[in-house]
Image (cartoon, rainbow, N blue to C red; front, side):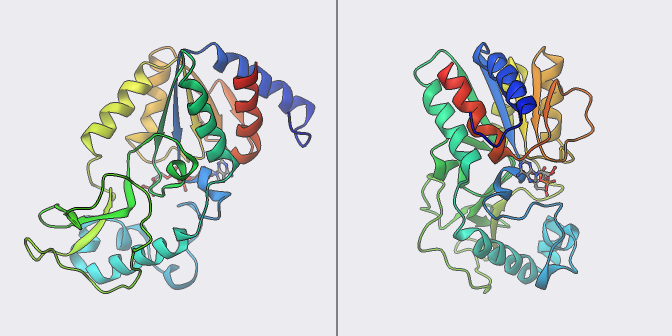
Length: 266
Ligand code: APR
């Protein structure tokens, strides 16, 4: 157990580890907070620099893309540049280690993320993305992936270009957009079904680094709770949510490594 944890936290980690060790099915939902320690700003952080005068309705809605595709595309290209050199942090690695360990145990550890970065994959996790993928594109009109032969593997390609020149679809001439779920858009059906099933059938649900403001993802912990799961939250600024059984008001990178070590070593 790492020395920087207080005696109280060590006790809490041990309590959570015991609960998790006896769980057959665990469902984990991550949000922007898990990537914060890798240097990727969260959504509720104030936009800085070039983009500080723009709101979400100017940059992350289908209406914004129709109104000003160049503005939206430029913002995503800027975000891609910001994220391109970021690496997984100890929280991502700990979750990947747990999933790896679970392969040889009778425990199922399902990881769901709202994040569009690929840091869980880089750490070695198997993860379901609810809000799409920063490194994938598709046509905004006919929805065909761009490039069409792009692989199903979801890891940043070294060949990605960051310039803000709009690209048009070879099939229908529509503008190419990032394959991200914008506000007002439906979640990918298969990903959402997998998330609902994992949440509804888990013994323990862990919410990590999410403000739990954006639905339907924010409803997954409630679904789990209604079906009898215990709920754990890890967030330095915990959500005022009464359904949580164990709250770690700490950074994910501080709690997850000792927690996963305790689970896998017990
Ligand atoms: N460890 C854990 N949690 C952290 C950390 C950290 N090191 N740093 C910040 N947080 C917490 C914050 O306290 C906040 O509650 O992470 C949360 C991030 O919240 P949001 O920025 O709202 O991110 P998220 O919940 O993932 O947003 C949901 O909203 O903008 C849309 O589609 C976008 O997927 C996104 C969705």
